[in-house]
Image (cartoon, rainbow, N blue to C red; front, side, top):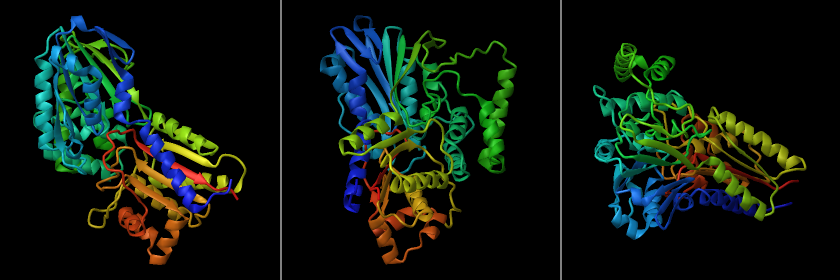
Length: 466
């Protein structure tokens, strides 16, 4: 079907937003939580409310505010009162909303995806709250992507400033999400099952929205409810592989983790409660039953986008990555190769894909502004200068793409024409990670504001076949 550039862009944006709507956190909570009489359903788990005295809610993440508000609505005013519902959830400052029982705590400023002292304060309250619960209490934990920065609790001897520096350096050196989380878990009292280990409730149920390709529950927000995953050796391997010990913070982390490894080796009675299947029910040392329920992921967004693509008359191909995708330039090159084939050959005329590529950052003194999705669109522009009959929209489902106010960017023949008119050099902007500046100048930014969800990145390619 032949489509104008304006239609290709409008359709790509509609399809992208439909994918986003499919993973809005309130709807996912309403699907997962239901009260009927004296029974509370959490996913496929049914809980007798007559056996529950109190309900405490903790957690954090970019989607956690929407999750908390929806959870209050799903439980209803009567249950909030009779079960003495209380809690604290760490969220970005621009996601704060009015609540009745669960306090939303600003764990970090908007646009700063790094741990802060405010986040530490919130985590301390959470750990204190869950440690005061009893066997007839229920703890509900709301977890979504972004919790790694929003739920900081550095181990003794390691400062928060050192942790932030180490996280920035790992990102700059192209660390994968698995590598980042291995270090975060090992250096935290909260992550890697720390929250679950401290909980004295009779039952803890985590409702988890995945921002990790493949949905490894131990990687989402670094797994605060996945028992036994805070292991020093994987983190030591990352420090060695990325040569982080040449930094003062890296050397300190290495020393503390080596000490912990030695202590574990000399304690043969130390038990590991980790289950081979993170979704299996396990118990901590206090007898609390831990259950982890996945309520949404990137595939949910891709499927939702696919429904809208069909409604608009596209024949689509869909893929949701189940592992980190590699360098953003390689992902962009793959999309461009598919775009060329779709434009020139019979077959599908829409590609919907999701995942999370990596970006290697330029030196700080040269670095501009941008994020994965803006970098991907710019890399696609460098790879292919002829965007006639093509449109690509790429955006983070959380509404944040790097330290910018944009969720991502759009590239089509109208944007390319504006780039050429202004005589901008895409290759130089790409080299210094300054995609935001280029797309801002040519009207190619995708800006959504906070979305209250987070399931990695979503990309939509629409094609008018020749």
